[in-house]
Length: 428
Image (spheres, rainbow, N blue to C red):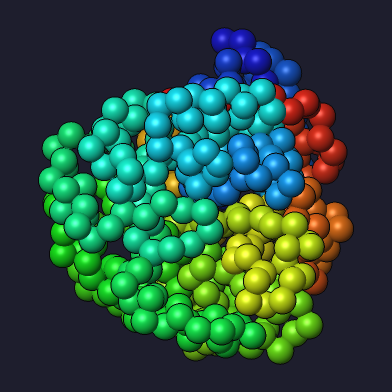
């Protein structure tokens, strides 16, 4: 048998590290054995071969907000962070609520994305009667139950109508779970992260999750994005419904104590950062295997926008490039197991959205990263690749991949990009 490429070294296969050879044909893993011959071979003696990341939650701002981010810059940032497949949210301009807007976004992304990608369509009041026409063209749907950046909401009166179509919906439905009626009760001035936390309290998240659980049919592919509180986690874990739970690096590694810092607006996000106790609770939930997916919720803004007065500064944190490296460092420190890490950053995201990625396994795309655990560094925003040239994770320890492969093709070699934008393709 002849392979296009053979990767040889210690790899994470079947939930364990083992020396092996990975045979690749036409971008797909077709053999995993101790010894393989018959093709160009790349040997990694000191490094570890891991599956590359899948990020189910990014906002690449393209189209409509190109000064904040584009598919070109966002996908490049993802690749440097070891993520080779992303799924982009619908709150762009125009919003992806129609077949026309979805096709236009896909065309532009195919021209410039460095990595593979999928798109979500929004389910909102404006398209509640027609959204089913879109599901053949997207990987999932997004529902906003509360107001947030440039998002169209689904009102309470239409939630039941959404779930009444349960037998027709074949794609996952992801929720931004903040109840808008609850948020309206807490409106007021904001001058700090503490204020933002109080204006969007955890109780509004809890109300939204209870509403979803009340209405959700079984079985139904539901994912709750970026939970921010232990109360939400407990409700979801106690629920008998098979609901996927998402947590971000910022909610699990940062908290409102950063509110005393000079650049507090860098940490402003929806839902807000919570107390240290809440943050630790979510981090422990990741360690214990109670979190399905670690998603970045990469939501970039310009430095000028973020350095505005706190009240006017937009919510959103950039994190697609730092998501995997932050947790790779924690796994190396043995604070979290590699099994938990790779499940929530690679395997489960791929499974939720039904793409043949996320693990080094026969039949999957040959998407892998090469990690040298001796090459640890502090995160420096000036070295990152998003248009948002700042990061709340500044100076935190991380381990970035040295090499990145997408569908068997090397796209980053020794931390240098070696392919052009447009190499990525839409997943099906």
